[in-house]
Length: 227
Ligand code: UDP
Ligand code: MG
Image (cartoon, rainbow, N blue to C red; front, side, top):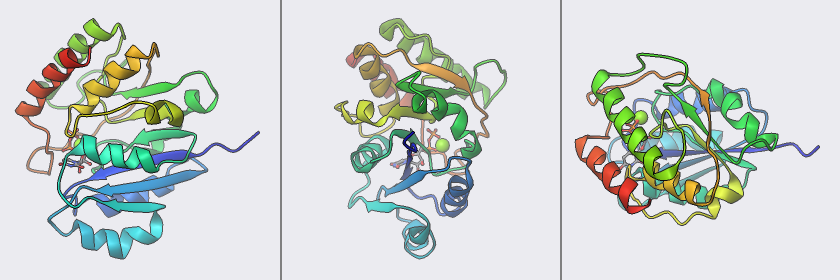
């Protein structure tokens, strides 16, 4: 049987505190064949120097944006460069655990699913700050209403796709609207998204989290726009 390859796409903006540790964790994750693609979304802190000096020898590719565009735009760039059998999104912080890739990618590698989300809330409670949990619950419920999916965590970072599937979707959202947009467009293709439980180690805004209240409003707009 052909050995399967996982492409890991890392959108990265001002992540000088975590990017090197994160890439090392990704390298050590228990997936035999991986392709790591970092997209630097025009970082203004020390990230670029770290990428050039320490990260470059460890990864397959680093792609640089000339202007800061947002997570969605960085992912579009990364997806276009992916060549593996499956593609997973990996934020450049340490909120998710790369050791859990096998849980998420297994069903895609063995042909049981085309899209799998790692859920922070499936079969478990109290993951993350209350306000974020409530917002995620609300956005997931609203998204389900329009997509017909039965997700517990639409906003999760760990979204894994068969490569052909993600590369066939025309994505428009530059920022965090990516999450509801991609979910709606996958549902429109008639694909049932599978979920598996994953761990979550949330960071605060002070620790570098960039998503905010406005992004929540944009998510509502995107759920309606792409329904
Ligand atoms: N990010 C990016 N461009 C931006 C803002 C964020 O590439 O303009 C990246 C960021 O570095 C991180 C990911 O997108 O790897 C998600 O950002 P964050 O952790 O702040 O959001 P959340 O975890 O809440 O989705
Ligand atoms: Mg994050």
